[in-house]
Image (cartoon, rainbow, N blue to C red; front, side, top):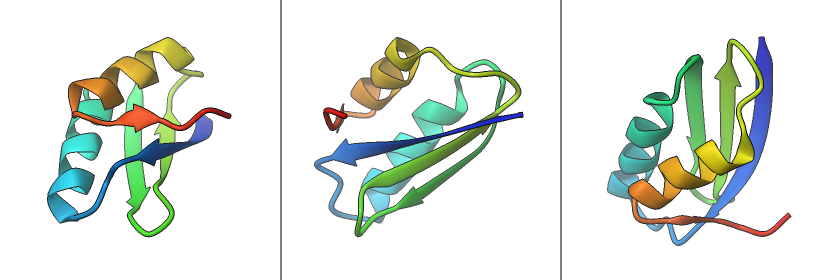
Length: 69
């Protein structure tokens, strides 16, 4: 199992959380997605490490961006 934590910018409500969760959950191997709205942190648990570009694309598909690291 692999866990990664990312910060997503622009989320302001429960709908935002749902959109990000739904898109990231579609990535191959993802077993759990947890979003903390106040901090923008998204914790992803997956069967294998996920390429950052894949996570970035899923977040973009939901209408948001990953914060620079």
